[in-house]
Length: 418
Ligand code: HEM
Image 1 (cartoon, protein in one colour):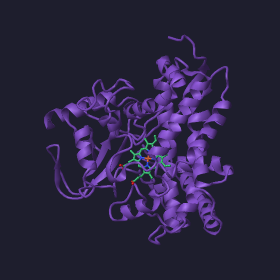
Image 2 (cartoon, rainbow, N blue to C red):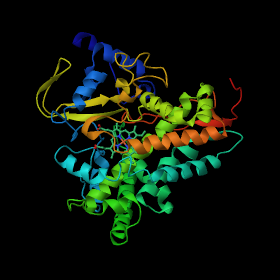
Image 3 (tube, rainbow, N blue to C red):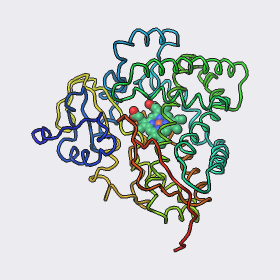
Image 4 (tube, rainbow, N blue to C red):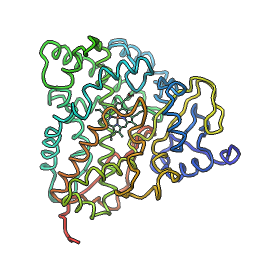
């Protein structure tokens, strides 16, 4: 296994890999499911079975990762970055970056706001947002699906959920971009570093003002709930809340945008799915679930090895870093038959890892499913989306998230009843 692995060279930072990692992953799963990336400080884990093994053992495989996840600022702007950071609230690890027992405490405090029951009130809100955005789509000619629908939908929804004023929607888009800019990306331009740090500071000032407001005058939103003590009397500090809300923006916005765009791209040559959506909207959830599996908007996540161990026959030293490729696990031919095909009747679709699994399983999974399902149903009411042919697809320059950055489409009526 190790000898043949030496024949592979994988560069996760390359644009070619970000665009099309699938054949590389098929080779990795077959030859080296735990693969040391040449020149990088981490191994890629690519099989469903091994990733599940890691996710089931958060003691050996911790989320408090120190390498690989974020690119550090270049030396010429490092001092300036520090100076800007010093003006904000000190960094507090939030859910994704923490381990038990801190993780359990925070997850308990925030999950009360994200249970499917707690989010029931969101159904009409998300529907209204989707209806309004779909209403605005041009009925003739082409438009960018990401700008018009896939990007605003989750931003408008999280704004409403958190009770942030609609006037902050554009800022939220800017803050989310700043928060993800250095995630598992190739080194960023020094000026962009300063911009993203300033955007983060700007964000902190705005959110701390809203938090203070909610403490004195609570509303019906999630932030108002989160500033309250829970039933044991425990509360989140302002710094924890500020970083947690930022985590929600990072975790929920681009991911949902990428899922929606991937669904539309994938359904381009499947008019029967658009007809199904229109005639049996109850099946939307199955389309979304299979779409989640294939899209894997969170390409993968990092873990830190906390003790010397062996994974899939490969010895790992304490403090080694792993990149768990959910995207690869979701295409694992040992787990899913005909894994590359979109099959909405697949019996085991829901065993995909697009939302992770175990103690860090996505907190916003119900919300993301809800947003995508409602969005597809509302779109199918006006027709089907056709992707403009012949335009190159650009992918985001990171291997932590995967998805197109633009998608030109037009609306076609639903014709040709079968
Ligand atoms: C299609 C959309 C989404 C995808 C694919 C996705 C995927 C994921 C994945 C894979 C994880 C696990 C990370 C790990 O194991 O290290 C995760 C965690 C998380 N997600 Fe999502 N997510 C989505 C939408 C959302 C939304 C809408 C929210 C909230 C508004 C959200 C909030 C979170 C949070 C807070 C965590 C951290 C949980 C923890 O560490 O305990 N996500 N998500």
